[in-house]
Amino acid sequence: MATGIKVKNSKTGTITSASPKPEFLVKKSWISEKAGRIMADRQYVFIVDRRANKSEVKKAIQSLYKVKVSGVNIIEVKGKTKRLGRSVGRTPDYKKAIVTLREGEKIEALAV
Image (cartoon, rainbow, N blue to C red):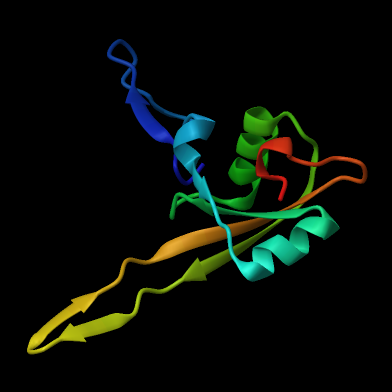
């Protein structure tokens, strides 16, 4: 697990990883014109932790919203370089997950 929390057993010295809680894995839902259009096709867009993988996102969405997920697509968005006078900065990188639900499922909290 990429985002697992490393736990060391003091007696045996073994290191195990525990899966993070779903509320920490999924940061927020993404609302845009395109995200609104694809909701009709049972697809929802979320901003997720940058270290998350598809299977972890699937488990998190299923446990948070009590729905069945049929597929997850991940998009890594790189930050852009921004200037303000002589100062140069950068917007942060983030990861978007497009989650497709099974037929007949929908997330009521995100309904438009």
